Length: 359
Ligand code: F0G
Image (cartoon, rainbow, N blue to C red):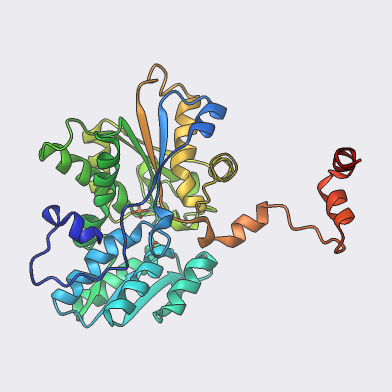
């Protein structure tokens, strides 16, 4: 069942809304017990693995709504600015809906997997000499004037779709988590989750809402600093944003929930990225690891002390395959060997042990 069908009662869709779906929704919520034990994190930690969505990121939840509504409202095409994942998702759903798609990306600053998706789905991809914050106002201007629909997260249907991740978490747990940790870029997703958590409480499905914990990359942390950042820099290119469009909404989510916004350095992001891959078997992209990096940071600072009965859910926003370059810059390269079993044993350092077993 598509996400729109499943949560229809909570979404602004009617009988005449076409459902443009790639089978999104129902992503796994995976217990991170090894990571929790190694890092000594007091609450239970669960990972909402959004990399398993059709185009490999959480954007598909919002895009099924945005593109379905664009078709319903008669848009002639769709347009977005993107650090990569929105572009990939918009391109795929636009292809499915037979709508032209134009994406503006910061030139040279988006991960290879995402670029390959947008280009292969047939979007017109334009590499702008500037960053994400330079791209978005151009898209706003052009879509206000023309009949292409804007599908960035300032499109309210995007957040409507994305809030369903909060529903899924509550449905899986049977209640709301105590804390929810999430990376923050343009600040749409944290706002969407908060909308989802509060709607479920208002509907009586849950009794509580979590404290929202938002994490920005240290080199792109306008909400932590309290002012826009002119030249955002981080290895987590997905969240390399200096002036988030949903700043106010996100601020409200953090304040109303009793949560906090914090920053994590690139080293902290990469530490979490590797721990997730090696301890949990979960390969996410660097920006996604910001949520877990933030939980590790807060845990070390004693924020969760005494919260052993609590549950912290962390959104892992995108799949690790989105950014193969970052992965291979850090990983050990394959060793070249002769095609013999002896060479294999020598290379993996097991030669003597294996001989001992066979003699
Ligand atoms: N994680 C990933 C993997 C992302 O791609 C993004 C945003 C975020 C986190 C932050 O979410 O913007 O709602 O706060 N990517 C956008 C894009 C900006 O263009 O793909 P946010």
